[in-house]
Image (cartoon, rainbow, N blue to C red; front, top):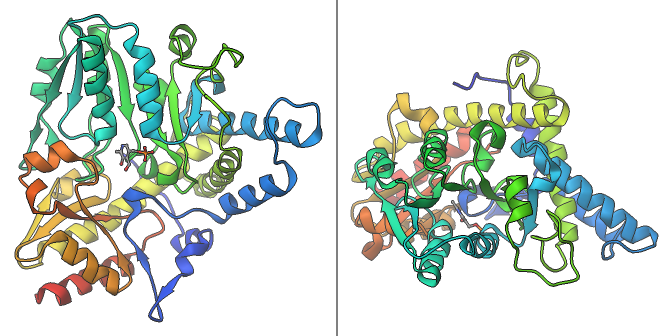
Length: 427
Ligand SMILES: Cc1ncc(COP(=O)(O)O)c(C=O)c1O
């Protein structure tokens, strides 16, 4: 249970320049966060700083190259702290989660035999399904898909558990659903996978902006996320257990590093975005540092930056629960509304504040357009959670409207959304 910690939202908002954007004389409301969050001033400044003082390729015998090497070292160390990885070499950067998952799953595939099984879920974003389906096709493996409870958007844990057998070699599962917001009990799932000796690939893209992640406590083999979903620039990140990153054979060019993380970071990295990521992590570190009073019992296994980052994410999680409560309570009053996911007050800790709804008589796209005209940004469609949308019976009818809160959103923004929805549907 996350204890409530102070989060000064007015102060938080000062760090996000794009929150000042106006449409028709009114500030816009960013509720499109699951598709990508706004970035911090620290991120923007770090990108500018990198490009003006350090722009070069790596490992050269001159100033800007040495600075680039230093930026990249710092990016690995800071990201290891955010995920509480034991070693910065366990952090692999790449263009985005999808590309990294395709690349690294192929390397894992070299260890698989025909008939080996891979478990995926019907709740996941396709970036954690399609790479495994295609790998299975290439290697003659069998894919088992764990089902969802369509009544509340949770994983069918009995089905998942039954599908993890001694034949299972990989379990690929999301930390939180990018469509309906459910947080999965990944610790339990990792335990089941470990019991049969299967590798675990956790898609934490949707969870990362909403709560603390501790890969050591989880015991996962791989965990992927994307910086642009947690207030940073467009790049992807994979944590991998060091022994696996060392032993698995990467698809790479011959002269490049043979050691992790270099052997997995193919080609030239997006140096300016890595600098920007460090900027965002500075922001989060300071947020956690300021919130640490009264939180001294939290994260006793961590020190320094790792602890501050985790305190920040716990403060964000606690604050977002208050927003989610307000949003869900307000949505229930809309005529003809259907909420796909956990809605009970008691379940707030089991979901991130990403809420999918439909409203009878209104296509999701039309709702998103009407909100967009009012300066309120929401996504509609399936957001690549294709199997879930099929199971919910929404795939043929435009999916759902997705309202995705982040820690820079406010209660008054939630109220503005609710008032706009009432106006649109005439409630
Ligand atoms: C849960 C989840 N997984 C994976 C992805 C893909 O991430 P990326 O855009 O970094 O490839 C997304 C993006 O929306 C997502 O929400």
